[in-house]
Image 1 (tube, rainbow, N blue to C red):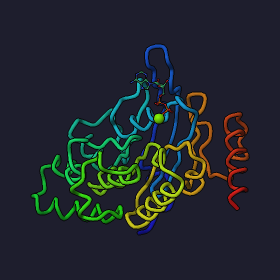
Image 2: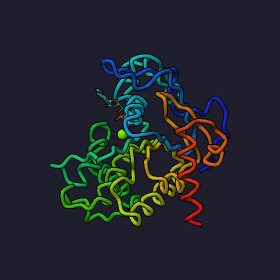
Image 3: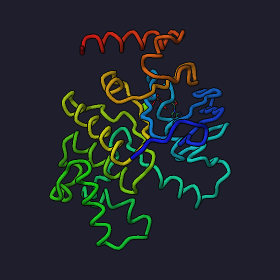
Length: 260
Ligand SMILES: Nc1ncnc2c1ncn2[C@@H]1O[C@H](COP(=O)(O)OP(=O)(O)O)[C@@H](O)[C@H]1O
Ligand SMILES: [Mg+2]
């Protein structure tokens, strides 16, 4: 699948002059971010800097206090509920904890968004679920298991399969490798990169993990001082004069040198 050339018209999602205020806690202050089609963008920042909150705005789960979110070119402030649901069906989200329904089998977890659409019969749903299981390298027999019976790596895969159920154009991942050992983490990153290529996905993900970042990201957006202070490639980060970015770049450069 080809990746469209960059240009103004292929921005998949955008936060424009976003403010988020919880009581007297100002989390985002005039924050701007654009994600272009075909890119894998890492969102990084200190703990509590507002990364998850920003992802939740972008996928339409919450509304910023001020400012605008654009998804696939549409301003979420200006669309009705039906239109917003249609836009949300074009993205898949993997939450930090996997967020599977604990009472539902793996099969029913992946089938859930498909059944919500009320467009498919059970035979079609079965075919689609089996396809998603194979995409994340799980077998049909795994469909029978309950979340409590899965390893951490498998929970992530099932969460990913569910995020892919509606064949999204945009995949949003909150700390996809947190809690995985280095080996599982590496495999999960390979899987996401491979899916990005085969499905032509755009990916926006949050990570604390420098290895995940170095292995996955085309671009890095740095959230510090309540806004995006850098949005560039990893190597360009070295040219940005900001204390958080400087420290961060120092850490990641050291890590990459060690890996060589
Ligand atoms: N629903 C909420 N109500 C009040 N405060 C919140 C809410 N969600 C997040 N926050 C606050 O917003 C800040 C950013 O949180 P979060 O986006 O989870 O940070 P990060 O993901 O970068 O660690 C934190 O101070 C957090 O306590
Ligand atoms: Mg978070």
